[in-house]
Image (cartoon, rainbow, N blue to C red; front, side, top):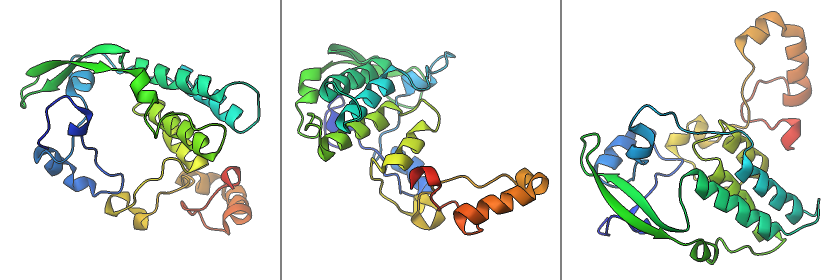
Length: 220
């Protein structure tokens, strides 16, 4: 992209709605940055993961305070959650060792020391907590989605479905007529073993259709 290796502006992600068949070509053409090979592909140690871990719990607390459900400082819990998210990926306040693959050979890396500052991160206009209002809630929900990246199974999708945050671009890569589905269809085994109850459930909730784009009661 014409920038030095380590700065954040050197990294470009692919859009959620882009045609995934073009992903490999865009990576080779240096138009999209792949995930870190050293972290995810070197060695045989499995990636750590969690379900409803500490980062998510902190951001749950921040959301609850922002919405007025409980008392406390949403900003304090917001910052705790963000810091815990970075800690999960091994990022600390200060110097961090970062390895980039130089070519295609496994283990052929160039190493950098990259400084990270939480103070600078939280002072960014898009990140600094805006208060117990709609903007602040959007910030909390955005960080919660980020905290669920590459862990927690489908929890990131469920949280997007519940909140609509973040807003994704939609295109050919989305499929389903460029619409992100809201639910799973019932398995065929349900139709063969529990047809009467399945028919009743579909009739009461989805107009008789097992529609993946229909909103279930819990998100209405």
